[in-house]
Image (cartoon, one colour):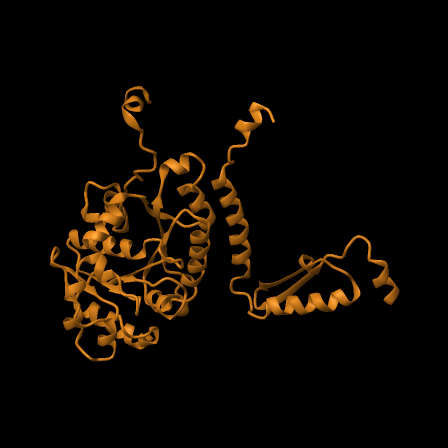
Amino acid sequence: MGILDFFKSRPKNTASVAKERLRIIVAQERAQRGSPDYLPLLRRELLEVIKKYVNVDPDAVLINVEREGDQEVLELSVTLPDQAPAAARDEL
Amino acid sequence: MTEIIVVTSGKGGVGKTTSSASLAVGLARRGKKVAVIDFDVGLRNLDLIMGCERRVVYDFVNVIHGECTLKQALIKDKRFETLYVLAASQTRDKDALTKEGVERVLNELAEEGFDYVICDSPAGIEKGAALAMYFADRAVVVVNPEVSSVRDSDRILGLLSSKTRRAELGNGAIEQHLLLTRYNPGRVEAGDMMSIKDVQEILGIEVLGVIPESEGVLAASNAGVPVILDEQSFAGQAYDDAVARLLGEQRSMRFLDAQKKGLFARIFGS
């Protein structure tokens, strides 16, 4: 390890790390604010059902309620993996 | 017209009571008639910070339960004629506060001609905190430039925009201000602490004041003299600026730059 590395290893700017982490979590929590209480449970159960057929990542299910005038639209988005695992395909 | 201001934060230990005491004193010093109420039932502390802990006979819960009159429970400040403290109960549990009871006390204060009622909220988002904010016209959200405090204050901002009487009546959100406390300009410059701009960007509301971290705050609470009365301390001066802004005055932010250290820096520094 050179002398330069020693100086480089000083702790980096932690305030900017804090700001970035907060920006993400605050945006996420604001998006959930005011949405129905059942959404997290609905999301979890949907994920379980989908997992019976496709091996998706826990983050792959996005669920959202949007208000358009008087109507509420439940938006559901599932990202499927590039290649379905062989086992899951056999069952289908 | 009585204006009800809640001082809240979500997180504990960020300086709600210190801020409530100094804002109340600052308003009273400008001749306003002010009552400051401790909503932290079971964990009373405002009386200590205000320096009237030995004069508490009746408290907020006694008034709500009709065990004494409001006049009997209001503790008159020894320094300012127009300043009164209503202490929290130390023995009852949080359920001792009711929405109807709080409303009755606030209405009575309005009839008595108070200009401002400062509601010192407990930490958390439970009943005491919910009631402290429910009747407010304005909110001062106390926040430290630190991740958990910023996140919790965003949660509180969400509640303030939906769980107040004004919001429930469909009259929109109450006016919200940020009060940044324990600000350390040296650490901000070193990149170890979020700046006023960072916090403002994340939360998206206007900053009422920045209170620098100061030895004066502990000294003031030790003595039972709200720090705004310590005119030597930067924190005291910053609170006075915040009070002026609360009353609509324009004042630029002070104490945002690190102090230069030592004689050398003073001579050769820019």
